[in-house]
Length: 70
Image (cartoon, rainbow, N blue to C red):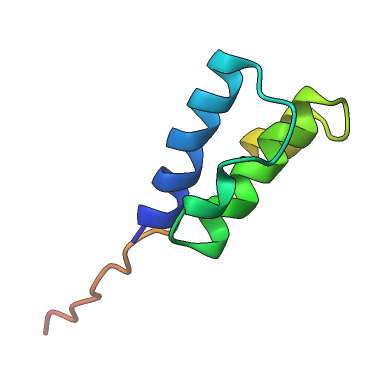
């Protein structure tokens, strides 16, 4: 359920380690959400957004089944 988020943050780690300040290479990511997270990381390094924006992506939770016991 969170594969796109994992893809984005995996790329983000590479961006932060290498201090990449442009979007070059982001286009290889398969998901729109992954690319968006990577772009936010570049924006963060360039001072365009806060740490809260970078770390604030919500994870998708699996729905729990509700069982009614009688």
